[in-house]
Length: 74
Image 1: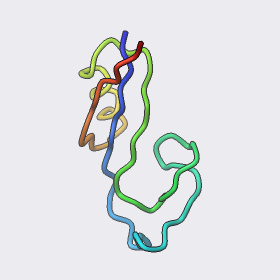
Image 2: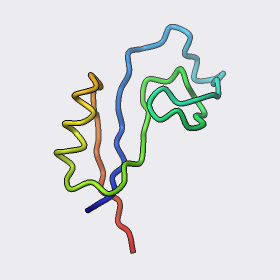
Image 3: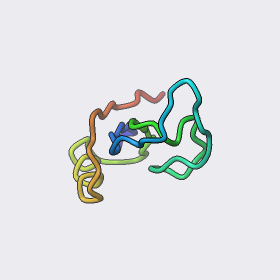
Image 4: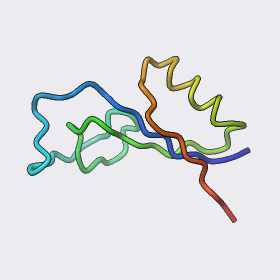
């Protein structure tokens, strides 16, 4: 089992202004987000067998995955 950081790209939000970020619940994880209108969002996914399974789960939700990184744990 491994942990991963997964980054997804959402459709562009016309309200997005990188100089005036809006905080609130993340569109992906519902946790606190520092830029809810931004296109890219990352989430930590824990205890998964492989990056391929993480990718398949996110794609099944209709999300565009741009990056998956395995987290090294002690």
